[in-house]
Amino acid sequence: MALMADGAVADYLWQRRFYANFDAFLAMTRSIADIIQSCFGIDPVLQNNNAFKNLSASEQTRRGQFQRKFKRIYAKFKKLPLSDARNVSLHRIGAPPIDVIAVGFWGQTYNGTPLTTIPTTETLPFPATDDPALPPPATRRPNTIRLTWNNFGFIRQLNGKLVRTPLRAECMNYLEAARILVAQAKGLSNTIHGNDPLTPPRLD
Image (cartoon, rainbow, N blue to C red; front, side, top):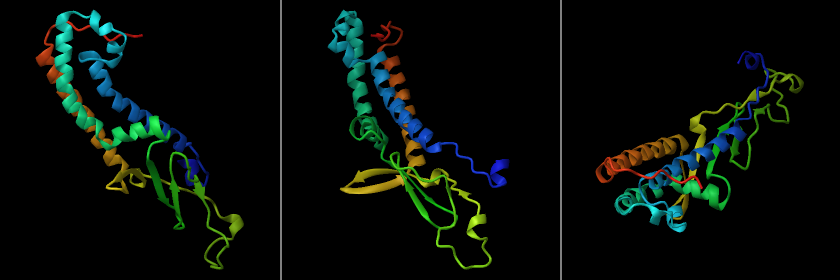
């Protein structure tokens, strides 16, 4: 910050880090439901490799009961906007549908996406103005383009139109929905499994 106050430009590569971390956030949050099913319900992988049939009859019954009840609350989680954004990024276009809109010091608007970066700094646009109050072009220092959460948006299709909503609010809603999902799963597990043993998920 001291260097920046003296006019130095500090590029901390936020765009590369932010979009990669956001992709990880989508994937990890969405995987919570899969982990719950693997630990307490019926993991599709267990069914496909017949490992489920090797469990005791009691555990198979309990896991089946859990799965049927969990699927109803899981269905709502799957329909959340960021759950679909995870599918868009991991299975469709390779990037999440988010953007950043920043207005620079001189009033110029910059639009960025995970695939289109915005500049780190800006200078007074040319041609240079004749305003004597401004320094000559050769002596103008670049200004760092600063961002807050308010600059980021989430893009989704709603009723045939693209709608942009604040990204931070969408993230907070998604985390809260994941917290509720975990709490509901714990309640189901206590009711259905109780203190009965459960086989740990397979590592293969």
